[in-house]
Image (cartoon, rainbow, N blue to C red; front, side, top):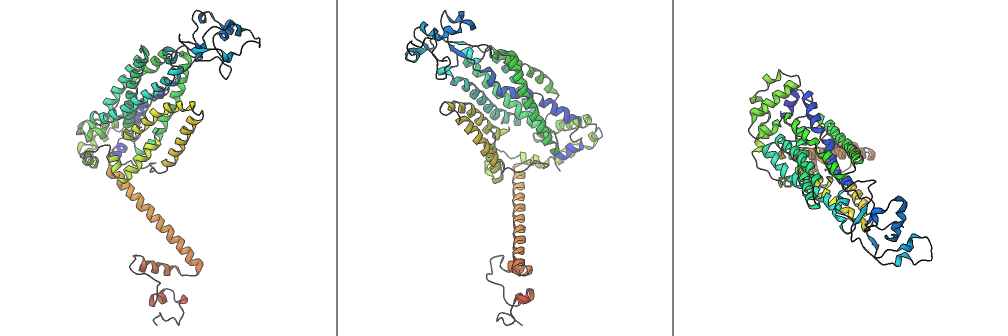
Length: 490
């Protein structure tokens, strides 16, 4: 008997759980936007060196004037990072007799760049000239953001165990709403990165605590469905981000559009019920009982408010309460064999999560933007690294235990016990298969199956070796023993 049984008694996956999951999943529409925001706010528009007193007067009909100031690169398009030291007016004409343009002297863009505003009206790249020698700063902003997500996974994971899932989720919504919106007011690249780092921290707080509240209020059999629905919200969120970015085309407006809705999530998050599990484990059983009674009423099971008493609740949670008295650290995930195997697998498989595994996921996410820099060495190298990592993670995922329709363990001891049971079952199945195979071999060779059983009984413990002889052979398989055998007792 455990807390899962109490959930079934108060309605299982009823009206409360539906509302609860829906309200927790809606913010997921914009959570994906935070992770992918850099693809649009840091978009790189077409650009070339600014030409003082000339560029402003250029338009599509006089674009040929650029040939006098901007050299062509290897792909025969205007260079993005150099210009001619002196204007080469003769290059405006198409006469082939002129000096080869590649031999003319060039210099870096001393006065900055001119950006095409057709695709992006404004991005952080055009705002702070993150091109040419500063182009690595574009990817660095995403790495810094993921560093904030990593820091948040470490900090909010511990705080939620101390102050509760609901309290930290409410705070994370507020922090994300304020900082996400104020990022649009960043006066410099440094300020922008600071805001993005703090925003990343709040993103981890939302994900960790939202997942905890979902899982701890729904029965085991509904978790697969809930996980799938949550993934749909993230997927649709990516589509919404594309539409918002295409409509606004300004990085400041995009940040405001993505950040403001979290104020709405902050206000309605007060409706959530705190995790009853967490309340009981922290000595607040009376509050947990009130939340259970509330769930029962919403699910149309008011009669359960009289049946589920404080004593019933504590008796169902007794095992978890006893386990919670032990002080555990992150190192406990690596001490015992089954937990160590699961933790190591999740470290590799997660590249997005919960606690220690989430921390490993964020380290991978921090490294991911930096991998794109390797395309300057070999254009296909980032794709090889990303694809190879996914294939490796897929193979390692085979080592993880199945959780479909299986009650999740509540303690480390439960995990190890399940691991031992699975190992014993595997050994029993292997032994049975070996016996079947041996029996078939005996039949094909003309030996009676009982002879194999007797032989295994006598020498199976390793105390006696050699062939079975004498009376045992006569009794079990007389037709295979010659009458004149000296080892037969008649």
